[in-house]
Length: 222
Ligand SMILES: C[S@@+](CC[C@H](N)C(=O)[O-])C[C@H]1O[C@@H](n2cnc3c(N)ncnc32)[C@H](O)[C@@H]1O
Image 1 (cartoon, rainbow, N blue to C red):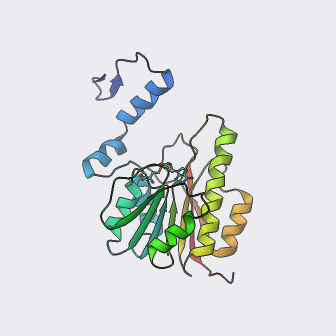
Image 2 (cartoon, rainbow, N blue to C red):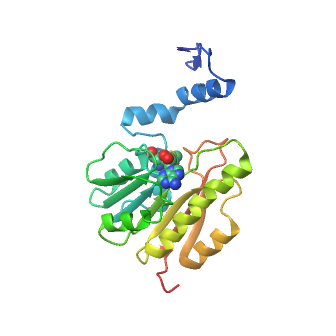
């Protein structure tokens, strides 16, 4: 059960059966202005604002025509792409089910499966010009392990980008503390004209999450 405080902040009253950590999470969630705004505006996740903010800074989505969304559930980023680039072909993938979004092909499968990349490009009907990855491995609470597991996903996404993107295309991926691993940065800098890191305002200050934004894919010959 929850209640509002005089200052308008919601506090979790009934903590029975919840760990201190889950009470803290719930309170933060209930008091998060982005969560409220997402509900008001019909976005499925507060994460939608991160992509909106990244797009404002880097002009990624509006001009895209073939988009892949890796780690799409519950569908906030996919909704943003659909809205900002209504004519784009969009495919998404997630381990979890994603409720249908009109005009979007969604796969419930592991992106690390051998046949996932081909399924995505086949469904897209053309080479992607924008590949988004908001994938994050389930955390186990051990910072180093969590970092390594998510970096494995980011690396796979980056190779997928280098192997499939149209020349001039862009790749955006969530990375964790310490930014992008050296090897990954080398790969991206070799293949893209610009590689930048960004922390959109909607990304919680306390989280170690960042985004790497690589634009101007040089093409397969690079
Ligand atoms: C932060 S959420 C994505 C939120 C999404 N961008 C949105 O706006 O709604 C990260 C997602 O990555 C997915 N994920 C993690 N590992 C994956 C994998 N190997 N293949 C596909 N999806 C994966 C998780 O299931 C989770 O739904």
